[in-house]
Length: 114
Length: 111
Image (cartoon, rainbow over all chains, first blue to last red; front, side):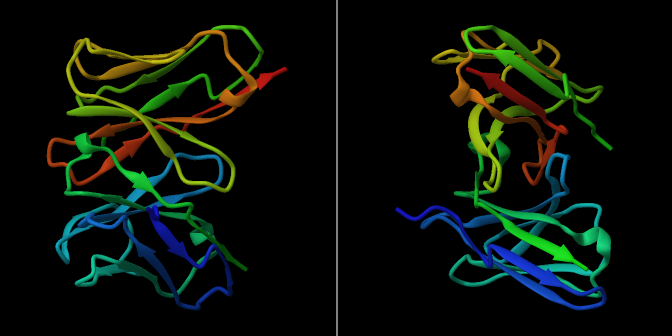
């Protein structure tokens, strides 16, 4: 069975540009969460979606947005990129929301903003 | 804002030694999870503990959740080079929508 799939794996963008990151959860998983991991730090929560509805949002500016599709895949969009947005963006899937069930993370998208 | 502090931040030991990593917070969490992350990969879940005082063992790894559900520890017995990686603790909220991660402990086990 395929795990959590993220694309692209690496991306280089210029300041001010827009980026779209994609995530396909494990088959049967209906909840997707996005995390940002800056080098040398632990992941920080950005969004959680369940059944196409936003269930939680972290302390990130409005430049960050996301959505979940009927097939439970998800996109994370970041507008007006800043140098500080350079990070590993992780997608995690679970059957349903609820951290007690444990999350399965993808390998991430490494975004570099120059 | 809930925060999790991990210590030590870096740990370099010889194969066969024992070690303990600590995860502390002033906040109560509904659950505590431990993950291991290797370079270029996402975190991989090792264990979830949900009951205060709970102890779980996974081969040479022992995880403990504090009685007050504010802290946790990970103990590795007879460390092996394959244990090398970034160990992350993460606290879960009752609402279930997010994990709060610590900054991680980078463990290096030298042969």
